[in-house]
Length: 355
Image 1 (cartoon, rainbow, N blue to C red):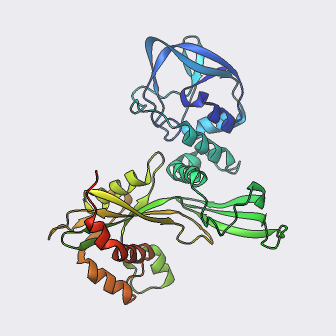
Image 2 (cartoon, rainbow, N blue to C red):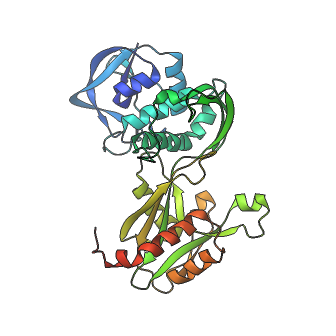
Image 3 (cartoon, one colour):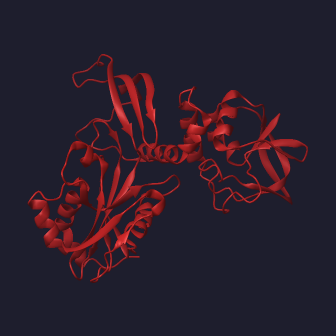
């Protein structure tokens, strides 16, 4: 028998792991664990105390064993029982609330991987698995798009007949055999579709409304190079993935610091959209950020650990607009944010500052 504690005892996690058991309590306390189920080192630690730890007594199943291997968990002897869901001494993070819904979705993604995919590979992919899991949760919570024009169909409108993961590295590629509802009624015949799994990202165009200038960044991009574009160094907005447990707003403020050493005074939501929904599973949260951009504010930044080599450029907003009009901006989000800001700059400049 083992006793699941912490986030592993959450009903949603039990469902994801397909585990049942009996509610029990164990003497002691848990410390930390804010990122339990999100990171391998995010689990809480045990400490003596007068409290009681709620848990679920169950048996180790193959699915639970696979999950534990991926997450680096081993049963820990405590108060005469074996506990699962705690880390080694010195790990556990802070005492902020855990995120059981996200942890359960990550568990579901792990157990949905091909049975022959090694636990070590899944463990290395855990950051991207977390990004993808969080993306799926945000998608479920979104209001339906196309309101008033596109009817909202039920869950049977798309039927997956088979799903295979063809590749799993930093990103992943999946092939699905599916059918979907037809406009004239009925269901389509089976079809094969492939998709590139990336997860959500956040995008930012910093703007100084006093000087009416913007900051854009320049970096090498593999896709244009592979296409044969003679200029694979693109002008872009600041951008990056929304990490597991992070909000899009927190992600883009972090990226502004990492990619431009920039503090944003006010974040203005622009529009959020799929950039290429035919095959790319990416959703962009796009913002304009009010910032102080004096002369000399641009520089060369980026994280060494991510092999980033990013140069900032200051330019008048009108100069960026002219480049967009002339077709000299080939990064779609930058062009769209420039057009969005041009249409609203006067109104935004007149709005009172908000915290």
